[in-house]
Image: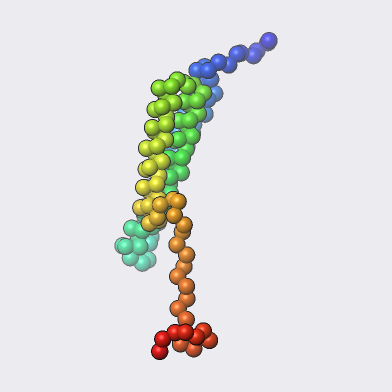
Length: 139
């Protein structure tokens, strides 16, 4: 056929390019999240307190790192599955995904105070006032 090349495993330049661009985007997301976290935490420190600024910083950094890690995992999967699908590379990818997943869980625990599989805490129920119509409270 005219102008058509046969694609074989390990010879997919487009897959390599895509995985590299995803890695570049991941780096940009992480770097941007650091800048945003610094700006927001400084602003929070000026308006409220250092403790609140620390929480803002942790939350913003964790959010950026989680997105960046997800992108890096996607790039690794593309590269491993399309370019080098050997048993050794797939096993290395599996180990890398496990390590990055544990890191993501740790970041979420640090930022939100809960594991990903735990439900988000709901707001505490309102304390009934002394004038409420509900019976059964001690006097």
